[in-house]
Amino acid sequence: MSKGPLAFRTISEAADELGVPQHVLRFWETKFNFIKPLKRAGGRRFYRPQDVAVLKGVRALLHDQGLTIKGVQKLHRDQGIKRVLAAGDPDAAVQFGDMSFDDAETAAAPETTRAAASGGGDERLRGVLRELEQAKARLDALLTR
Image (cartoon, rainbow, N blue to C red):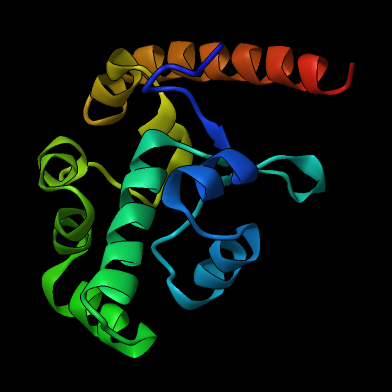
């Protein structure tokens, strides 16, 4: 049974999809501040679809286009995340280019949550927070089984 396109990936699944070893993904996290997978207790990483898209861009820039790590850092600093995304998949740059990669909870939340976070009322935000806390509690319960 394969995961859907919006499902989170473990580090092994992301590494397999990218064709690189897991330790390379961990290394890239230390070199590129824009690679920020979600981390559970114990440090287990989960990659969102946009994280995988960014990793594909980094891999393409390093392996296919021959840039150095410093070159990719400079490219990101000068041209932004859309340029990194476009290197791996031009469609991903359109799909994820306007999304913030700094706030994992908001980026991973449903569209209604993102809309609420971008200018909804306080009560609406409290409701969204309750939903997120409930979802986190369910995930924590599943992970501790």
